[in-house]
Amino acid sequence: SPEAARVFADAWASVSSGAPLPLPLASVGQGTTATAVAAGLQVAFEPSLANAETLAAELPEELGPHILYAASAIAPGTLQKGLEARGFTVERLDTYTTQAVREQSADALELIGRTDVVTFGSPSAVYAWASVTSHRPVAACIGGTSWKAAEADGFIRIYGPRKPGIAGWAEVTVDAVVDILRGVSHMKLS
Image (cartoon, rainbow, N blue to C red; front, side, top):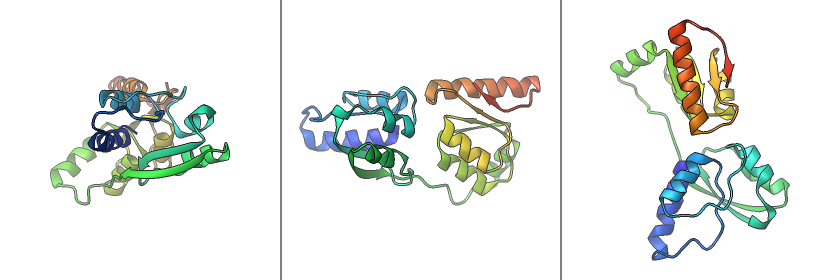
């Protein structure tokens, strides 16, 4: 994730004295790559689709056999298990976590209740939304994992890009808003 890349890059910068990272870096997608590059790191590999399943399947063997996997503490084991199934040895480094805001203000709850389109960049964002309201507006998801979480939490109208990532997410968010303005009601995979 971009946040894992940011934390990893900051940690490397604090101990490297400006030296380049002495190992190849793989990224799950464009958002993570952009964060790493902005921090001065070179990305050696990015999969054809921005998700853990594809990264696990496509990571070149020459980038192993030992993998240091920087992730959110709440990330599922999809990437790690997929890489281990291919023979890689994976050391997971939980670099950050996310959690829902425990209490919403009355103003925030009122805005949530009037929302027509909500965007989700992770399953944890879906769970956070669902924990504070039963309102299920149109959902625009960054990819399949968020889509599945939205579906499981009762969202009916869900938009998601065929190719997960920031650009596709922005596109389906615009599509969702346009469809709301036109009165269109369906699920859509762009």
